[in-house]
Image 1 (cartoon, helix red, strand yellow):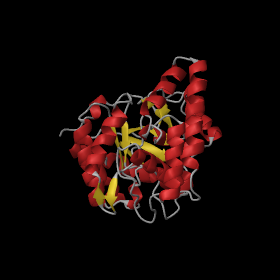
Image 2 (tube, rainbow, N blue to C red; image 1 turned 180 degrees about the vertical axis):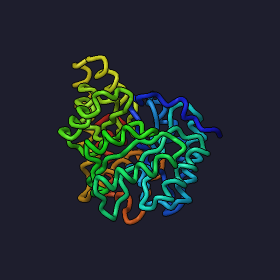
Image 3 (cartoon, rainbow, N blue to C red; image 1 turned 90 degrees about the vertical axis):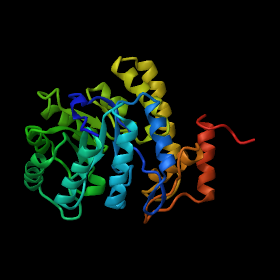
Image 4 (cartoon, helix red, strand yellow; image 1 turned 45 degrees about the vertical axis):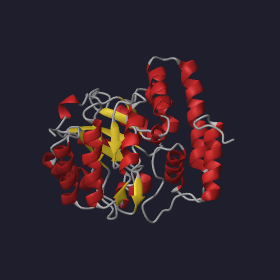
Length: 312
């Protein structure tokens, strides 16, 4: 399949769900579940699909499995929406390899968080981008995820990176609105550069104040909800926006609030999709799926939210 990067809007706008990776075991895709999940997400009218991000458990997956996921997802999406592929890695060469595989499969862009493990300074991160970007065959989106990578793309670094040919935007998952506003300020003369909000709880606020869109994990479950709030916010229908925002907060407080660990967000998403009959809820090691007690809590929340029917 040829690369489809010429359909990538500048800036990329809208709801781009970070897809979970359906698994049957440590190194086997749930292929049937993947097919159902992609169709479920696309049916909500989303504006793109992001695979191999944090929600996709990318760092925990073998490179072989990542390659298989890229091939299957791009083939199934078949240019209906842009596909963004995460290429974050601790190894420069592996990020290039992943980008080349994405290009061959027909993806539209790649997404990169700072390399984790060895802490890098801002000058080092910028030089890394200056060296990496010319080697990439697709447009690049930066991914600010400091809680996990322990590194931040500071606003001035992003401003400088935006001058590098091939860098098309940034997804910010810091949850720090002051940081997000600083990004907006330093990039105010770059209307072609996408500013995407990662925290769905901040979706409405960010878009209302000029963000390009959002990368919402909850859109794995209810893609149309996130598309609807994006559209309502863009059209300044504040009454509808407020109603839909409350529903998003209900999902956040219930589905993501089960369990005791940081992994609860992933477990909640995957368990929900399993309860909905879409795909397996197996998680990559070192995590495990919710046990029966937590699964029952998730099922009850989904019933209360009207996502699945109550058991008789």
